Length: 242
Image 1 (cartoon, rainbow, N blue to C red):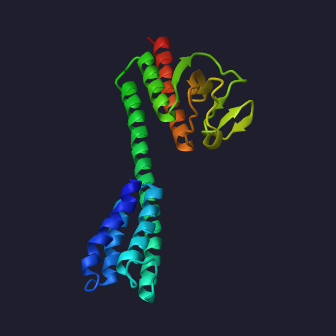
Image 2 (cartoon, rainbow, N blue to C red; image 1 turned 90 degrees about the horizontal axis):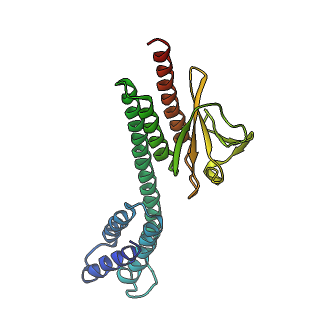
Image 3 (cartoon, rainbow, N blue to C red; image 1 turned 45 degrees about the vertical axis):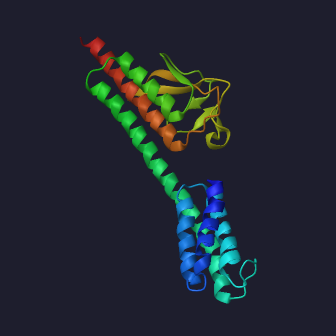
């Protein structure tokens, strides 16, 4: 892509050389803007900026007087060259923002699909073990961690905790997950509860690489754990009232 960012404007400018006496430079600049937009649409910042700079350089070299020199005498051509760089940088940033928004929407759709799959398993009377396994699978995917397992019983106060507000703490010390990532030297506990009653805990492992799930991902994890808690509470109710 970086090669295309340099070569693309060069080819376009070279192709316009035979017409430079009859083809208005403002129109040539618009053609180069299209090249920049095409490169920037991939959302790669260095490529977009490089395409803008390359367009400005070859526009100056091939299409402005004096020709075949990196010198510009006409004020309009100077402005067009500057605008090529500015527009190229702006379009690149817009493309990057758009791709990030698209990726965010895609992630949200994936999170919702995972929550819905687990809800359907509960609604159709799936076994508690199956629901817990499903939640473990979803937690591993949402948090981008190595693995997950479920244990009955209360939490271990010295272990890192993924709390209901999405924060991660270790012995009351807040861990900045976006900066430092999830702890890799210990399992992270996510308490499973329903109606305020703890039903067990998921132990999350993120040992092989640094995982940095954002707050939205961590809150989805809490919602998934709550679904497991609902399944466990329903099982308990069934056992009490066969």
